Image 1 (cartoon, rainbow, N blue to C red):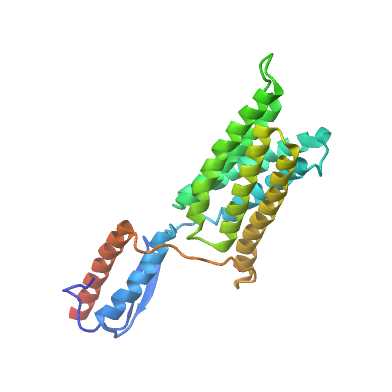
Image 2: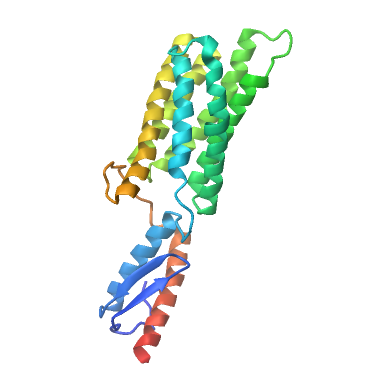
Length: 270
């Protein structure tokens, strides 16, 4: 894409766009070089869903809440916690896995991060619903253990389906998030199968994959906190990067590029 109004060269200056949080130095380069540099900058930011914002990053909070609650529940599923201590999971599921993740999801929504908003809000709701089921659900009289297993299996199957397409979304984000969702998907599959079949060994296997999921989520949370605090990448996350040829993003980028070259042209004629 080129601009007919772009001058042959541009005087040295700085162009910034507060709306999109973009700032690049303009030197005496050809319009094609400037266009390429500007488009790379703006499309990268747009595709990551990170407009200018005064909010901090809610991602580490959501991941930490998810990790701790998943860890405790998985310890119970594997038998590391005895059946009589299962209630220890409920307060954490309510406050940290549930409410804290729900808040993280709303903050991600305010930061225009659709994936983060959907993930944290949904899994926050998962933990709230889990705590509610464990605390208040009393099966109707006459319902068999098999019926209860099928009902719980359907509940877990629904979350398995949701996790599947969320997992696909991470393939263009980072390796650390990919691992979280891959192991979470495996855990949900095993827990679902264990509920349907009533096989405690399958459920225990799902618990072990849940523990691995928790540690990957803790790592992803720690990486953001530690890397941001120290200003260097001490814990790599393996950024895969977004697909940059989204038509909507390119339309927005072209509009911003045209505005950029209009301003460059005005500067050159002053």
